[in-house]
Image 1 (cartoon, rainbow, N blue to C red):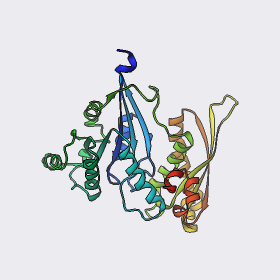
Image 2: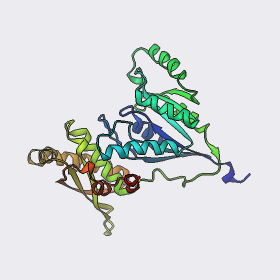
Image 3: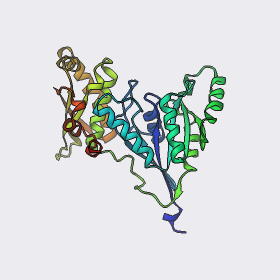
Image 4: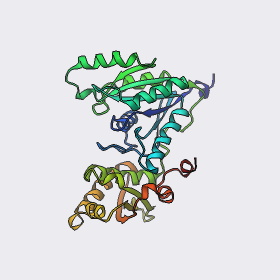
Length: 307
C-alpha cells in the first residue's frame, strides 16, 4: 500500500447556536487562532476552514456561523452558509454548552442530520464552568437519546480539557483516500481576510453591544516592504452604519481606534511573523448589511446572494 493510500481524511462542519464556543473549539484543536472569538453573538459570519494534519490523519474543519433567525441579507447569507456546510461534509460536530438545555436551533440541526443520515459527534463545551458535575452526566444521558451520535465528548476549549479525546473520536471517522491539503496548511483564508477579521474581533471585544453587528472591515491594501526590514503595511477601512457609531469607534481623541489598532497589530504580528504597520480608517455606509454590492465588498461569497 502506497503512502498516499494509507493517509485518511475527513471534512467536518462545526455547527451550533451562537456563543457555544465553535470558534474556540477550532482554534484549540489547531493550536493557533484562525477564527475570531468574542462573547458577542454573530462573531463568525462566514465559513472558515481550518486544517489539522497529524501523521496519516487530516481533519478539515469548517467553522460556521451560529444558527439564527435572519434579520437582513447578511443574516440570510449566514444561515445559508450553515445549510451548505452541513450538506457538503463527511460528518458534523455539533457543539452545545455544558449544563444548558438543547436549543431549538440545535434540535433543528439534529433533525437535519437525521434526514441526511449524517454521522455526527456531539461536543459539550465549557465544562470548566460547571460546579456540579452530576449535571453533566444527566446532560450526556439526555442528549444521547436525541440522536445516534458517533460519540459524545465533554470538553473545555478554554482549558484544553477533553480536546485530545475529541480529536481521537474525530480521527476515527477519517476515511482512506489521501490528504487534500499540504501538511503545513492551516487555513484557506486569504491573508487579507485574516487581517480584517483580527480587526473586527478587537472591535467586537471593545465596543458596546449595539455597535458591532453593524461593523464590517475591508483591508484595502496589504504589502510587504522590500527593504529587508521584515515589515508589512496593512491599510484597512472599518465600515459602520451610523455617524454616531463612527464617533464611538474613533473614541475621544481617537483613543478607541488607537486601542483597536494596537491590539490588532499584536495579533497580526504573531500570525504573520513580522512587524506590522497598521493604518485604520472609519467610514459610514448606511444599511450595508442589506446591500448586495456592499456585502460582496466585505468579502461575503457573491454566489450565495444569487441563489
